[in-house]
Image (cartoon, rainbow over all chains, first blue to last red; front, side, top):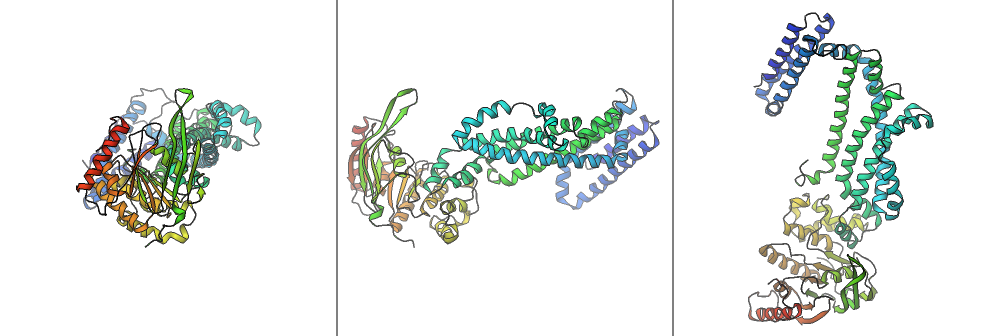
Length: 309
Length: 266
């Protein structure tokens, strides 16, 4: 069982070795190195887990998924580079994608960095504005009267639909893209925060008032904590919307970032690079999601045992 | 332990108070919940309010807490009229309503934080946790507590403000019979040590007789005080003693008349 991962790696590499004999030597070389590394690391781990219980537990849990992932790469290799079942150059094999990842790492790193900066500035701005407007709308009925119709009319417009306008209005492509990301985040955060605040259990507020609470306490120590589970749903929805907006904004207006890289590589018909950028995006976005999950678990530790996530 | 609250400023008077609510389906109609109700409670007295469900007991308690305002009439603590909620009138509900995002300790501190006196009075937090026997659970979150423990936290949270009057809205109603009797003794112990004026709303006639100095029986809609019965038994009271049982049947009989056979928990 512990040897399933290295075995799968050998199978996958064997597929490559047998089927894609005429692959460019550089591609084959880095692909071979990768799989030798996987085989080596997994054998070392298989030995280490004999002495290390925590690692054993983790590997027991993870080995099927790793094995499947590696075999899936073998399958991909087989239908692309092997039997040429999918049209080239749109579907390069894993060895070609790996080669693109390595050869273009400088630009890819740069693009990821730019995307990160843009995403975080837009997201942070959207979250701050969204929290403030959400709390105001949720707490004060007069703000709700004026704010809610605006939110309901303007909010559902996809942020990407503003691109033509944003490019005219703002001084730089970066500012307009960050603004669009912020707009995409602002709507779900505002909506969920407002509903969380206005649905605070009345009895919590009653209790707080009989304990001598003023308005500040009621808002910041009762309504907002009570709304935090809701707020996090908004933060997750906003994060998803921000990825979408980021990629579209980058591929249209901004001349950097992963979205730009994808459309640039596509322009040169270098689909190996397109896939390489997609793989980076997958890692990039899921890392941010995971980080947000971690923040939530920390903040909502009091829910542990009440709610199954 | 804690300064006694027994002085003239902790008396409670309700004078000719009426309260009605709009009827949900009919915008013009209003349902009379309380009609010209008057009562007064001496400082340090423990009074129970019993009556059929829907007679306006909880409405009266909310008015005294200041969470609602009466249509007419006046409510006074000592010489001061009640206009808004205040830390001097603590309220404990049937549902403990602990803040689920705060630990036991932070729940008990809530009143001090709300009044911005936590720094000066932090030492009292430990004292109150001890009073209700929850030191071991200081860092637990409310959903880990049993019903009885949660209600003790709610009591400590209300008491840490040293309220002049403690309003109890069926605080033990959701507990099992055994826990409930233990908690009755516990509340009595708190009251005997502190002599906080207490007004207890309850469905449980035994509880009312066991605990209070005086029982007020309310009638069905619109709510009025129908009858008052002083309980002059020596504490701790014997729940099976002859005078206890005769009081009980006397109240039951009255409630059946007052409530026209409406269910009364026995």
